[in-house]
Length: 177
Image 1: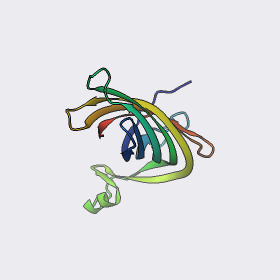
Image 2: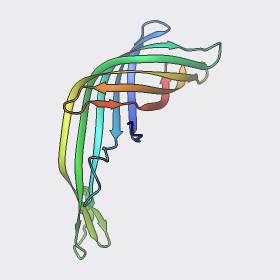
Image 3: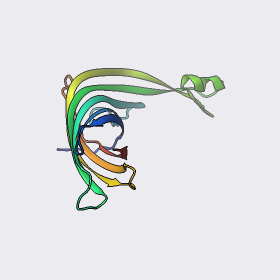
Image 4: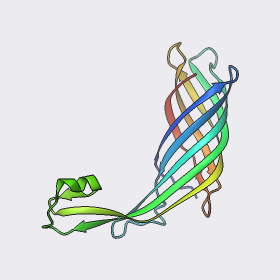
């Protein structure tokens, strides 16, 4: 059974055009993954976060124009290093009547009229692994200067310990090539 979950991602990269249709690209990607709610339940203020950081080298084959239109398509794939960091945190509420100083916000405390909230990490775990990715996307040319809007879906799989990391982020952005 596949669960539909939402998260966020950011990608940045640079590369070299080998020819009109072939490119080699180095990329960094961050993905904020929602934790598995079957494992972590919000009991007593527990909450979690999972972040994935990747550095990959990819090959891209592209067709810039489909029938003289501003639309194009491409396929992309490669491999690299995947780093996953997960943490479980808990909120503690300090009783009312405790003096709330402005300096507390510097240390991560949120002051309220009924006291303040302190967040502590209960557990965290990180793991490194090699991984692969493959996907496809489409582009829309923005004028004649080489800028393009793109939308891409790419499958990522990393052989991390105990639980393999698998995700399909959908990325929208602007690229120049």
